[in-house]
Length: 266
Image (cartoon, rainbow, N blue to C red; front, side, top):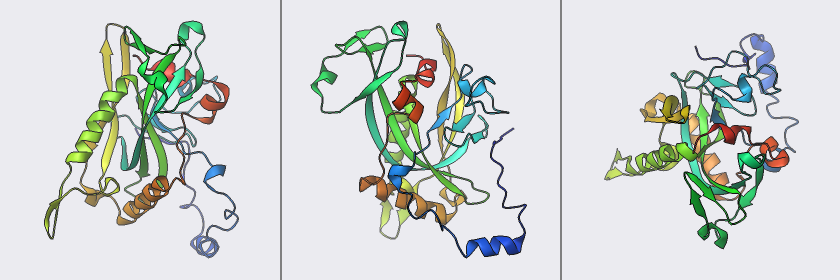
């Protein structure tokens, strides 16, 4: 059953009070800009994720392995029911991690123009930098999460790494192939004019099992029109450089945490 830690309170507030609040919408938030916020990540909970461990500060009550979740709010979506999203942008990041055998941990982001990216070697499925650290390619999809029942939206980064990269490539290909029929014939719509549902599926090999993303194109009429307008604005902010993607969550970037990365095979 789909769940969330954050139950919206708007249904419990008196209508007249809600009306009064709406007259002062946004007051007090004027000075909070993009640099003062963190874009949440939309990720999958693996069976060993800290979100499933009651002893961890990021524990999410009621969640299960395979569920998708918001790293900032703790809201989660059932693995089968999934979550509706509108893609708003894409970028590929190159991340340096210390090997698990050396203690693990995020070491920093490498620029796409750095010549060190042409000097990597392979140790099985692991791509190694000259330093001996691991290079992880992070495909970052900027998305607008949409509640099709209420029309509520929230922006997030769906970052796909390791075995998830094949899903990212498939999704990019599917987006390139979308066509709508317009007054002048068929055309390729903007990324933010398409709608998708993300769920998770279990995969395995001789080294174990894990959950991976599954992407399904959905009828755009399922999505409220206002959500597409919000997605367009998110895209425009990203294109203008007002929205800065980051390598990982604040904990991963500032403290070198690698719990999420270590759960993903190859």
